[in-house]
Amino acid sequence: MAKSDETHKTKHEKMMDVTDGQSKSLDEINGTINVPANAGFWRTFAAYSGPGALIAVGYMDPGNWITSIAGGSQFKYKLLTVILLSSLIAMLLQAMAARLGIVTGRDLAQLTRDHTNKGLGIFLWIITELAIMATDIAEIIGSGIAIELLFHIPLIIGIAITALDVLILLLLMKLGFRKIEAIVATLVAVILFVFLYEVILAQPQFSQILGGFVPKTDLVTNNSMLYLGLGIVGATVMPHNLYLGSSISQTRSFDHNDEASVRKTIKFTIIDSNTQLTVAFVVNCLLLILGAALFFGTNSDLGRFGDLYNALQDSQIVGAIASPILSMLFAIALLSSGQSSTITGTLAGQVIMEGFIHLKMPLWAQRLLTRLLSITPVLIFAIYFKGNEAKIEGLLTLSQVFLSIALPFAIVPLIIFTSSKKLMGPFVNKPWVKWTSWIIAIILIALNLNLIFETL
Image (cartoon, rainbow, N blue to C red; front, side, top):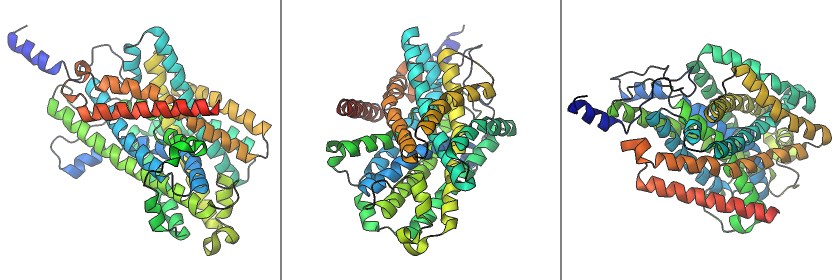
C-alpha cells in the first residue's frame, strides 16, 4: 500500500467502516432511503424526517398517558418539571444513539454484544427483553381499554385482540419504511391535536402550569411522588428507544467515508429527532395538565383511562365542555397511541434479538412470540382482577417503573461507546456531553436504588 493510501486509511479508520460480511442493523431497510446531495435546508430536512416520529411515538405511548394523568391527578402540576427534565435527557441520549449508529454502522445492541463476554451479554439481553415486555404491557393495556371504550368489548377480549396487531404491522411493512414513517407521524399529529383541543377546553390556570416546571424538594422526599416521577422517567426515556434510535438512524443512504457527508447526516437526523421529541414533550405536558385540571382534589381513584373517558362526557365533573365526542376522541387517540407504539416496539425487538443473540427469525414470528410473552401476564392479571380496571392499570404504572430501572443498563454502554475515541473518531462525545450523560446515569441509578430500598 502506498504511503498516501496509508495516510488516507488512518484518517478514516476512526469513522464508520462496515466490514465485508458483517451483518447490518435492520438489514432490510438499512441505507435504503436516498437523500438529495445539494438541496436546500428544508428539502434536505424533509428527506431526513421520519425516524424521529418513530422514536417520538414511543415517548407518548399509553405508559406515558397513565403516569402523566396519574401525576396530574395526585400532585397537580408539580411533576411537570420531571417531564421537562426527562424530555431534555431523552433528546441528549437519542442524539448520542443516532450518532453512534451513523458513525460506527452498528447499533447499540450489536456493539454491546461485541464488547462484552457471553455471560454479561446474555444478562443485558434478558434485561432489555424484559424492558420490551414492559413496553408491550403498556401498549396492550392501553389498546385493550381503548377497544373496550370504543366498541364496548370486554377488556379481556380486547386484550386478546391486540395479539392480532402483528397482521397490521406485516401489512405496513410491505408498504415501505417511508410510508410507515408518514403513517406514524400522522398518528402523532392526531394525538397532539386531540389533547391540545381538550386542554384548551379545560381552561387550566396558566400561571400554575409555569410554576410546575420549577423543581420541588418533595420530589425526592415524598416516596409516592418519587415512585410516580420515576414512572414518568421510565415512560419518557425508554431503553428500547435507544437501541432503535441507533438502528433507524442508518436508514438514510450517505457516503460513510466522507466526513462532511457523515456530519450532514448526523446534523439532520438530530434535528429531526429533537423536533419530534419536542412534540412528545408537549403531548406529555398536555396529558398531565388534563389530569390535573379534571381530577386534582377529587376522589383518589380518579385519573385512569376509563375515568378520564367518562369524565369528558360528565357535566358534573368537567362542566359545560362535557361531550361524548370528546370521550370518543380520547379513545381514538389512545388506540392510535397503542397501535403506533407497536411498530416501534417490534422494530426495537428485532434490533435487540439480532444484535444480542444473532437470532434472525421472520418478523411475524418474532412479533407473535414477543406479543404472546407480553400478553400472558396481562391476561392473567385481567382475569384475576376482572372488573377492577384500577388494578390492571396499576400493572401499567409498575411496568413504567421497571423501564426506569432498566434504563441505566442501556445508558451506560451508550455513554462508554460514544465516548470512545477508537470507535467514534472525530465524532466522539464532547466533554460536556460525556460528563452530563454520566451525571444523568448516576442520578438515575441512585434514585432507582433508593426506590427499591424504600419499597422493600
